[in-house]
Image 1 (tube, rainbow, N blue to C red):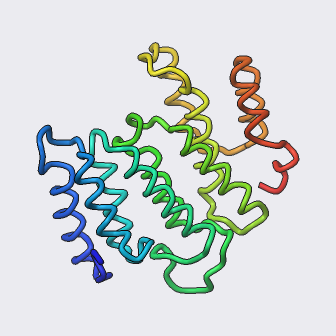
Image 2: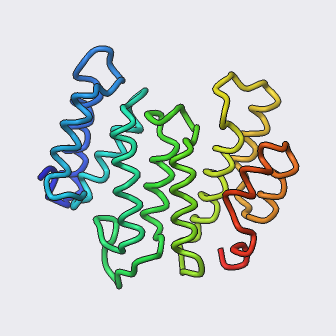
Length: 220
């Protein structure tokens, strides 16, 4: 398997070298080819999972570095981080008790980097499957002692998807200002957030009601 060592110097060198190869080896630079994506997945997935910090960091780094990447690579990376959070096993867990159904700080950081990576559907643009993953994690970790940044990531990720879904048209200046202010808001109130979306348009209201049962709000 790739990247078994956990020494920081080795991880940095390994991630830099392999991500450069995967992202920029073929023209045009910055676009991960189907062949390179398949090769990377095959190297990491020999035993069916990501089992080193270097492998996990590599997946995220490739998607951050790429202008675009095949959906198969994005989907694979999402599944790996979701599995770690739900199972309580994986390379983000270091020291202390390992508990399934709990999201720690390392996973919050990785999830944020992954769903807002430029190699996704667009810079700072959250896809439907990414928003759905956030909801699955929310449902699976209700009431758990999750990392302090988890609620903010959930609100910003789902809010980003709802604000941009169904349209890839260029944002107006006013829309861009509103979106930037929302993404920079460090206060978290899930109920207020969903109510605001519901009042914004009929489409937002339908998506909100389908996505989240308000009975969950007190536990989240």
